[in-house]
Image (cartoon, rainbow, N blue to C red; front, side):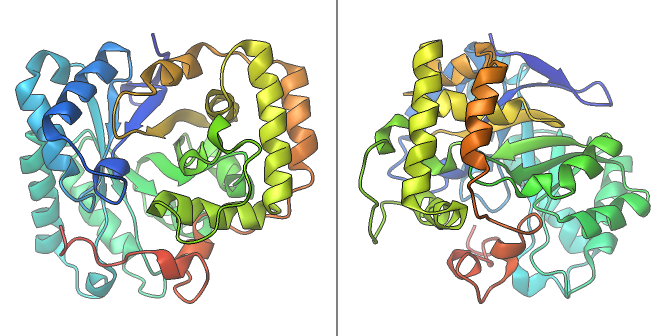
Length: 344
């Protein structure tokens, strides 16, 4: 079974979380009934924690339908959703609109209290994120939210929330062998304030897998949004040749442990300080057995040394959490979608 981890308030979750973004469109057609059955298979395998968002089209409703269709499984399930106001609403968002979005998430998921709400803010030049987070804390005290969490905050703004007295439970952020920006201060800050890290992108949208070992560099158009996003990260990391060197190292480690590249890549992040869980994006249960292996794999010092040798050659990405993606004029920011609540 997948190992468990416990947050500071005693809340228990699986160290591997089933991600929901891939069920929101843009990654192929979704068979609804099959998706519900797959969720039950994940829970049976010990992956009982699910990630979703108010802006992931249809995913909260899908998880809610799963909870209603599989009530015994639902009792074993933890759901982390996100609260992501549209960019155009940041300057006008108020108490009533915040509560309305939270109420909508509760209704879709079929719960009277959300396990955790992960708060994201698109633009720090609109300085209302502390005020908005305090409204989420008010809803926590009112019993609609069990935990206030964040996603993709940088160190200075997370400090502001903590200093405002908001008890941040977890921080969901991008963290992988290709993207170590959390190590530029965020890991240290979160460890010092008992904020657990939930990490997405550990296999870089599938790039960190055996499928891409020895393959030529792909050219646009790429097959889905994940590949577009993480291809930019590979370019920042040091380009395709260095990426292939990383894959070769991962393959040698995988051979030693009788597993695959993606499992090693995710385990390497799960072993980092402050990391409570890794999030695996899955449209179905095809790779479920490999996901289960993340929990049982044990990397040794020689494995870590081999990865460190390759990592020492990387050139980026640089900076704090999500800074590149928040720059709407930059390579990373131009591919983001900032107005998704209305679309949902």
